[in-house]
Amino acid sequence: MVQRFFMMLFSVGSLALLGGCHVLMDISDETQPREICDNGLDDDGDGTVDCHDSDCEFSSLCSTNNVNNSSNTNNTNNTNTTNNTNNTNTTNNTNNTNNLTSEVNCADGIDDDGDGHIDCDDQDCDSSPDCADTCGVDTIFFDNAEEACPTGSFCSANNSQHEPVCTEDAMSASGTNYGDCGDADECPVGAACINSACMPYCDQDTHPDCPGVGVCVFTLTGTEYNLCGILDACTIYPDSCANASEGCYPYADTTVCATAGTLTVGDACASVNECAPGTMCILDSTCHKVCEVANGDADCESPQTQCVGFTDSAYGYCKAP
Image 1 (cartoon, one colour):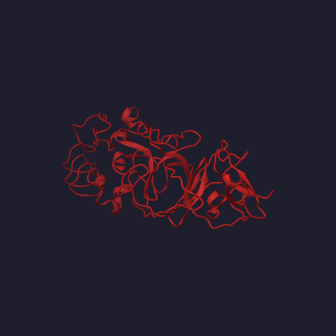
Image 2 (cartoon, one colour):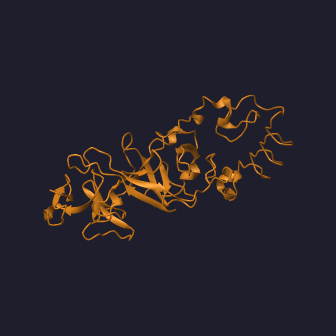
Image 3 (cartoon, one colour):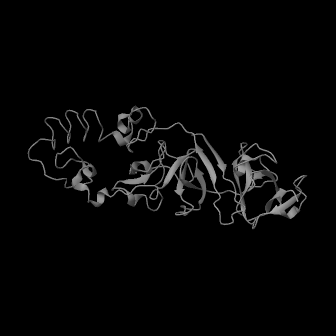
């Protein structure tokens, strides 16, 4: 999965790098979408959804409760199966006799009353705790996503549309926060698979908490979501980032490796790391050279000859006096 990410423009304020503002890095999702087999969405845009999609042929999510397959359980319009709709020689079918008159178990995968609606899709289950669904942008986090959906599922926007939907627990069975995603992009509850890594959701305004040692530092381009990440301090002089495509940039009272920009001193900019390593974009939307406060003005060159330090940081930026 290929991603680009850029730090948002630092609002320097009274020369404080954070200064009470939001300091985030942008992540652009440019991945080839993959069909998630249980979220009711056409993730890859090929016109087929979930178990109807050939991508899901061998998914464990489609080994039962499949559509248009033979010899499976809880299928629709199939033969020789159990608990089907509009079939013959089956159990609990629509228009059969000796069926229950209401959906008595809202989490068993069976059409108890034979009305063609199973579990939470049956209006009999509207008030069942098993069918509580408050899934939305405020309930996709690691500590509330499970309570937002019926039993056996959790609220997640870990799909190509970034749409919050109740997702089967199987999609959280593998993957590690701040580590690799599962083979089918699985991630722990409350995380999304971005750049092949599981990044927990957060919101700097309403839900800044992150699992483990993560920090709410990213924003996903084109969405309203923020994401947690782990910050590894680097050095700017010399640049210590191991990835050749990254550069070391100031962040709060530390530094972080981020995708390196190419703009030079004096160029107009909109995000910190649009500027080349050793420079950064600040409040005047212009690239400035980064200076080390301990060196005074020695790191700065004409016409930006004065080093102005950020509060609680070893770094600052060069400006014209």
